[in-house]
Amino acid sequence: MISRRAFLRAAGAVLPLPFLEAMAQDDAPPPRRMVLVGRPLGLYAGHLIPEKSGPDYDATRYLKIFEPLRGNFTLVSGISHLGYPNEHHTSVALFTGASPHGVRSARDLRNSVSLDVVAAEQVGRRTRFPSLVLGGHATPSVNRQGVVNPAIARATAAFKQLFVQGTPEEVTREMRRLEDGRSILDGVRDQLKALSGRVGSADRERIESFTGALREAEQRLEQDQAWVTRPKPKVDHQPREFGEYSIVERQRQWYDIVRLALQTDSTRVVLLAHGEGGKAVIPGLTLEHHDASHHGQDERKVSQLAIIEEAELTAFADFLQGLEKVRENGRSLLQSTQVLLASNLSNASGHITDNLPTLLCGGGYRHQGHLAFDRKRNRPLSNLYLRMLHHLGVEAPSFGCSTAPLSELS
Image 1 (tube, rainbow, N blue to C red):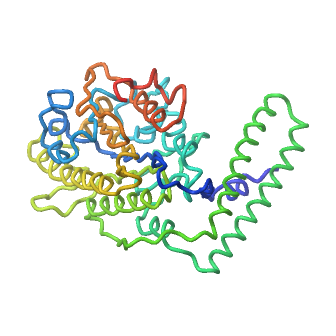
Image 2: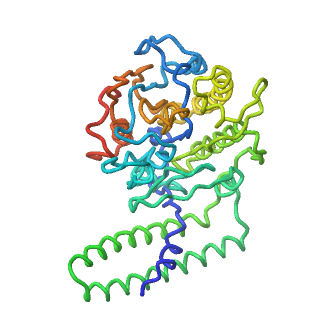
Image 3: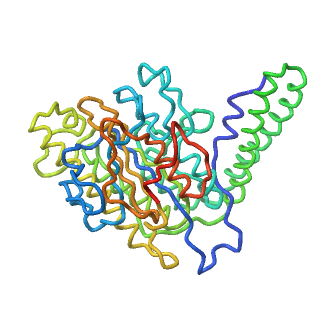
C-alpha cells in the first residue's frame, strides 16, 4: 500500500528555483507580481461606492483615503461570483470562482484552483518562495487538487522564514529532510510503476494524474535544495506580536512583511487573508469588528463600523504608497505589482454575496477610477481574475466561472 502520509510529508516543503539567468540586467523590465488581499466582512457600500463612474468620480468617505493614489487603482462595482449563496463560508471560494452548480449552501462548494496558485506557476519559479500564503483566517488559497494551502498564521513566523538565516545545524537538518523526501518520492514512483500494470484503464488514468503530482513534488524538492544554502536577504525591520485588540496594527505588520518580501524579490505572488472580527484600539470605538459589521442598518453600529473600516483602509492605502516609493529600474514597485483587495461579502449584516467590494491597484493598468457594472445583473468576478492572469502573462483560456477576460481594463 502507498503511504499517503509519506507522500504528503515529502511534498510539504515548497521553495523555488534560484534566478540564474544572468540574474537581472540593470535595464531589464521589473518582474510582474501579484498580491491578493482577502477581507472576510466586506465594506460598507454607502461609504465606498461613488455615484459617478469613470476617473472623475466624486470621492466617497472611504475613497478620500486613496486620493493620493488616484489614477493608480480601479474600484469595480457590480461584480461578484454569480449564483453563490448568501453565507459567510463563501470565503473559501473568494479567489477560485468555483462553479455554484448544484450548490444549496456554501458547504456544498466543490472548490477549484485559486488565482494565486495559477499565477505562481507562471512567475514563481525564479524566487525563493513561489508564493506566500499569509494570515490567520481560513485561507482561500487552493491547489489544483482542491486542497486548501496552509497559511503562515503569525507575522513573526513569516518574517523568520523570509529573512532569518538558519544556523549551520538547521541548514544541515533541512538538507537531510530534503534528501529523505527524495528517497520517499523514489519509492512512491517505483510502487506506481508496478501498480499501473495491474489495474484497469480508469485507475491507470488516476495513476497518471498522481504521477504528474509526483513530478511537481520532485521539482519542488530540487528547488528546495537549490535555495537552502543560499543566504537570505537582510532587512532593517523587526516584527513584534500584538494582542487580540490590535487588528489594524496586525494588518500593518502583514503589509510591511509583504512589501519587504516583494522588495527583496523573495516571492512574486502573495495571498494575505485578514482575520475575521477582533477589536481595534481606535478613539471612539467600542464595538468589535464582527459585531459592528452585523449592523442591521442601526446607525450607531454603522458609525462604529466606519471607524474600523476607515482605519483598515488607511493601513491598506499606506501599504500601496509604500510600494509606490520603492523604485526598481525606473519604475515603482506598485507599477509592477497588481494588488487586489476583495471580499466574499458585500454586506456582512445580511451575508450578501453580490456586488462585492473589489479594488484593483497598481500593476501598470490604465486604471478607470470607478468601473461600474449593473448592480442587479453583476459581471462575473472570475472575468476580472482572468484579465489579471493575462496581464501577468498567463495565457489561460478561462478561470473559475469566467465567460471572457474583463475587457474594460487594459
